[in-house]
Length: 369
Ligand SMILES: [Zn+2]
Image 1 (cartoon, rainbow, N blue to C red):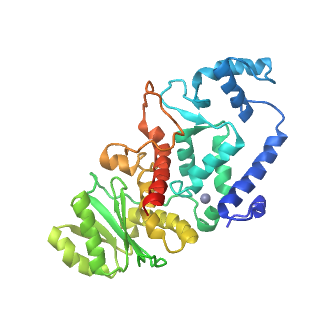
Image 2 (cartoon, rainbow, N blue to C red):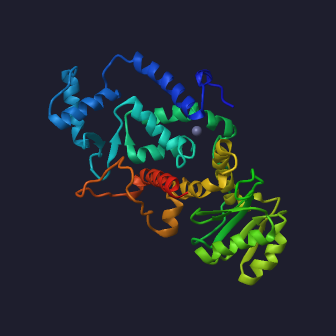
Image 3 (cartoon, protein in one colour):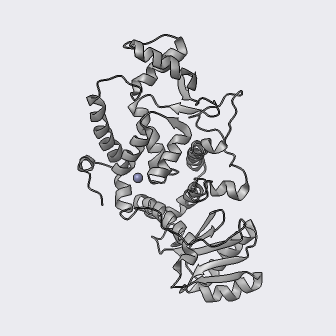
């Protein structure tokens, strides 16, 4: 575990502690700064005033006024909010103008369900998709470093493991299979998770299981194959009790090749192993918090993984699988689009939309469940 002196200051829940200690160390630095520079959030509050009313709010010196005139064309103001559009005006990112806003954005993009306590890069991608402020990169890094739950759960997280790639040429051609568990038994009596990962798109399917019997595992595999189509090859690791029976029951009937990753070449199933680590890492965080209802969160967690950009493919599994981005209802207008506004790359906006989906899910759950 990392030891940050200021992390010891945190009290209460992880999330509150996280916000508190970050705010303390952050504000201390802000106070030291006397200047009124572009890195200062006050610059953007003044810029919003300038764009809205054409007037400069004091104390704006000559240099600042010149700077505001220069950068103003990269921003627009709408509904009393400032958006960064970039010179090409192909996207809109909400400009964060207060420390309070900054904190809630970091909470949303890191600590919330879809934020999944991702690492620095993952969190940064989510923040960049919808928001803008000058010290974004530095703040995200600090926020993640100060996150107690991330420190507790990822003591070994130093980088992504190197995988020996298997040649796969199409989506849903070869999938890797693995089991997570036993986890704490849920209200639905689930104890295991069967993960199926498409090696080409990295699309993940995860099914909660009560037991890891051949019958249950087979049923989950068949259900998934009927939903997404047949595959040519399934990779599992050896030593699982279900391997032999599965081989007979499913693989022979459906004429699917079965590859067993050997102990000497464990990387054969490396992709799925990594997915499992990912799912486990995220699940553990939920299990810590909500002991016996991890299976309720499982679909949202998997959705979060499938709609997050993968560094290896540079796309989301969802996009590679369906050749389109998910349609999501507009729930939270963190980044509203005008009718005249065109989006050049929908992926820029993806994370914002995923967050919207999470809020919708919570609304749906509170109403119907
Ligand atoms: Zn975290």
